[in-house]
Length: 385
Image 1: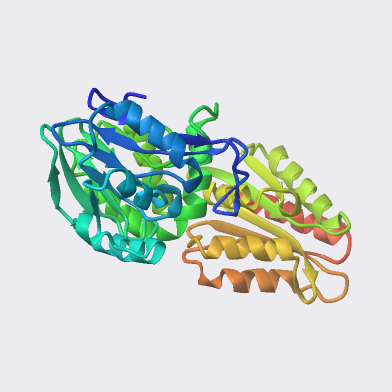
Image 2: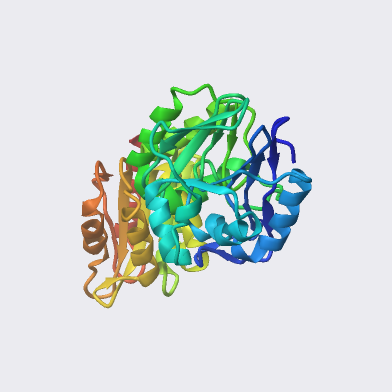
């Protein structure tokens, strides 16, 4: 792939992987992106996962021809991007490794060496002259590791954004960018919205025409759309007005209550409703949708005087990613001592700027006229706020 006349893509697609980071389901695989800037001096931008060294090296050699690289720029030390630094230096012992001091400290841990003889340490505002191309470096701590840097090529107006603006899916996957980019962002970067906002403010000062992330496609059109979504996600604003209902059900009674609530909401003319059975869904997808919509309904059973395990996992996944600025409604079920609503509300106390509905629905084993009336009241409230 040619990014620009002087910038070439040499990354790889991983179609064998089933779980990214041992956690996220990736049915369409993942890409590990690497780039080469061809100039008077040559800079290779990041390596790839360890399993793909041979393929990556072949891609690299096909671009280099008879030339040898002068620099390897390491933006991020996660092994899916940095695993082949030592292999690269064995192939090109005269090349310099360019990265942050924190990254070199991590290299010592990963490889037993910090490449002292090949090291070029950069920090905020540092530059690297390649000829016509000049790279300027910006620190991006906790987006989403502490050592991260991004770089900007002023000649071709390209931002090398590390894991920022990445997405799940190999480059040959035919899927919409926002869905898998949202799941990637919320799951992996979502805790660090403040740090992403800081990076976006730095990016505002640059004339960017192309974004080259470490996962997913190169972005070269309608950049305001992608940057706008990142601004929304990282400021924890709802992406759209809508209701997401997440539930667990043991014998089907809580499920029936959720189905009844969904119908009542739709009957009131409110169409943007999504429902998820947490026991049978990808948890990362559920977390993504909770951040996507403006209103969240949590429905679960009392279980061991607590809440059903999948609901506990779900709420924990929300709070550890700084879930905030939403309207939340609670539905609890219990046969003799319902405590689910209290437990869920307590778990959410660490979240900022949540508005709880006045109506909390209590089901005693199965729906009755009283709990159905409460569902009516909740539907009215959700459609009104």
